[in-house]
Length: 178
Figure 1 (cartoon, one colour):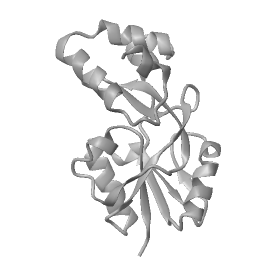
Figure 2: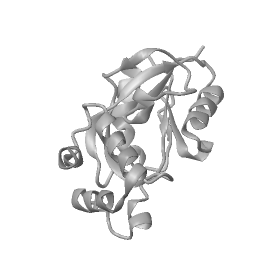
Figure 3: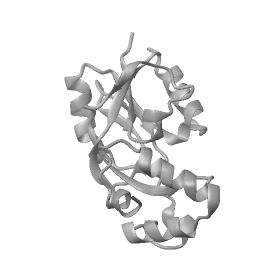
Figure 4: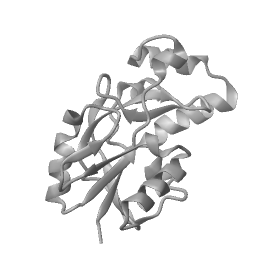
């Protein structure tokens, strides 16, 4: 039976929905570069791995209820409302990583997994799309300016997401929106 760790840094922590995992989220996961650099379908700025603009952030983690990698990946993809292409994973024993990003950003993740006796690590691997959707490169100021263009319920949801993000998210955008 494989031990599969699920990584989280955003809404999975406070709104796991259909994600099946054991116990509570633990705050001692590996570090990854995380930024509010994805504009979701409903207009929120969401947290994603972003090697260019992300701050090194210690992730949360929990063990999947599944011991089969395929089932764990499908469960995370279902919770995220996405396809398997946007779910990353690492096989700790073979040191192989499936992600849209350079494997070098995951070196510490593999060490962490080995130290925790984890077999596989899975995470949401959605790309930043800020530049494409907003038409300007991502920056804290551009993100704040984007938020100022939102109205009504769309703006409320966007600000709620930032406010509810775990305390480990120390992006200046949080302070700018308080």
